[in-house]
Length: 272
Image (spheres, rainbow, N blue to C red):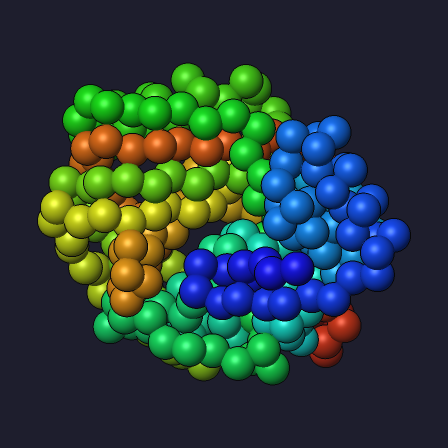
């Protein structure tokens, strides 16, 4: 059996006859292709049998906002919890985007760089992305109209959502973060965040909506990162104007939170 593990890789899997027959039977009954069945089964197996429709947080975000930029979660460990998400790296060494299981590191120059599974993160938010519904938008939207559309598509403000937006962007402004030492609390006004602008570009926005009542755990509201279609650049979304786009939204009813076992975290003052 030949399958595709990503857009540009091919893998051959040898199956005993009974498994091959069961796979084909299941695919016929479910309306999925054999490849789709195998992908979903592998996701479940590699997640350790966890509920796939779960948002996983490697740490509460308020620890990072207080200036604790070094925690002990490996990027390789994130893949057990999802194939889609965002975050950052120890010492705030750039923005993170995970798409289709691939993790991209966006440095302060706005470019993507390869990153090893042994690299650690102080904060990441991931899930196995399977959209609950998809909507096509054919009209141009300025940033206010874009946000209004996203808000309209959410069934409730009190749920978690994974959001992926693919398409054409007339303008995108993003920023990234420059590497810095531990114990320097994040400041919206004074932190070193170079801004980059793209015009008439195809790309993808990936991220989440989080209810305001759990702001100590994750950034409240919409939190989106941008990657160009060629995966060569991007950053944290600042604002955008869109052309034709496709919005996929996954309604998530469960959250899993890890608490770091580091001296910094264990002794941190995190009142809220």
